[in-house]
Image 1: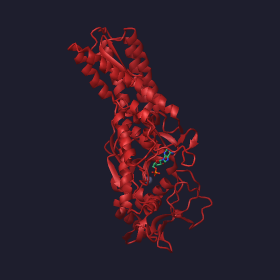
Image 2: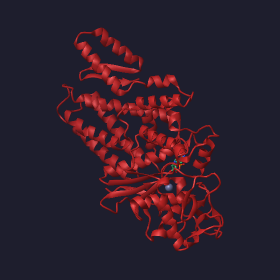
Image 3: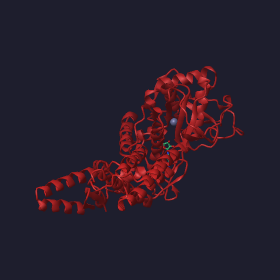
Image 4: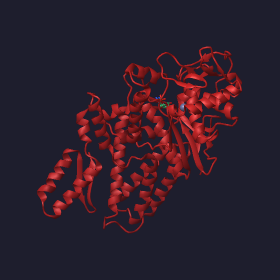
Length: 495
Ligand code: AMP
Ligand code: ZN
């Protein structure tokens, strides 16, 4: 079955297709590196990750470009306040952004493009528009895009052009502008600002032209998919389409993918509401990176998502259940008492759920249904294991489901302790006081460390060193890990 995805351009669900060699050429608006990323930003990047991983599962190759906006109004403002050159100011936040992406196991796009490294391409694009009088220079030396010259303006967001004041201009890099106006392509230098000397004059690029130039540089004038958070559809993406299509006379991106906003406890996330969280804030409160990932990807991207701490705790429990189950299936392989015969009913259910899992993802990335199909398998297989009707032949198909699940959700392998330790080290270096030590200690043992201790205990017991064996059991119990000696060897779970 084809993978279907809602296309904001045309407002309908359509099959996703690649126009060249089955390789999906996609561009996603990346972060503006003026501060640490918040969990709303990461919701968007995580769903891009779900999209890429699902596309790969469907056999697509990937050429995914993500930009780093490393020059804009906010960056200039903050760098000036910090008394740093913008490059030095943004380097810190770019590094932090990738650390956070790694912590959340978001795959790296194939190409990372920086605005400050694409200035020549932006200038060339503006010159091309100027040669057709679509870009014009204002009195202060800034360049603007004449939206009256693009009759399709509004086709993405459905804004109608009625009431546009001809020549009314906007030069700020903000998202939430309602009015359709001529927008800045190039901003003339202001005193004290970082600027580039170019044939257009001394200045710096506007925000929208950055993405057009970077997308076309790496993907050509026409490509398969363009994405970002829902706030970007207008005016950012509308403006990208206008300037790109006017310059190339070809359709820009065919498929537009927008992730709905994250709310926190029912409200818009904002510093003044006190409900504003970066990934680091949550790690320091003692929450696990895997739980944050799982929670953020489990609500389908087109649903508005309400983040709650309750949800985060449920998410951590759900992961624990999955990991315990994965170990139980693994252990079944070495259980000599396991019946040889395949449980055909269970096998039929597993196959049906695997199909349902793929179909849910194909259906506009319905991660909630996909996840539910996997939990149906967990439930049924646990029951079969409990009543000894799980056969040796059931192991591989069940593991197949877990593999397909983890290829997209990527939460089964534990790396949480390492991520949390890194967050604590960072917080100490930054002098942050808000570290929740009791929670961090509770998660300071990793699955790998538990496995190593259990192996050591097994060896000690073989050598009849029961004192050491008991000491290990107690140490694990203190860290919330329960171990059980069974037919298939030792199993364990977190309390
Ligand atoms: P920025 O760094 O502000 O340019 O934003 C990076 C990405 O995060 C963009 O694609 C935004 O649309 C997206 N974004 C910002 N706030 C939220 C939010 N609350 N929920 C989901 N995505 C968001
Ligand atoms: Zn962009």
